[in-house]
Length: 119
Image (cartoon, rainbow, N blue to C red):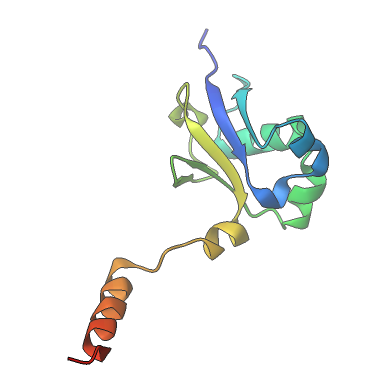
């Protein structure tokens, strides 16, 4: 029998209710159910366990589960999660708002700023 991993779970602000915040559950340890087969199953389990269904439904089902800043595809196997992983549950909209421009775009912006400086 495989031992289910314990995850360091962080809930994105868009899913936090006052009740969860009061209980200090925005960052908590979470024991994964061994019956989870895919990352989508893991997301559903977390949503059900923490009563996030109303907020998650309002987000049109665009939930993202990421580990150490890397998004986990919903169809990926749950076995990718290891004991002690830092897992974040966010919405796709919130994740898109936080994305950094690609490196090439950053280089162009830096070059334009350097060219614009008077000598």
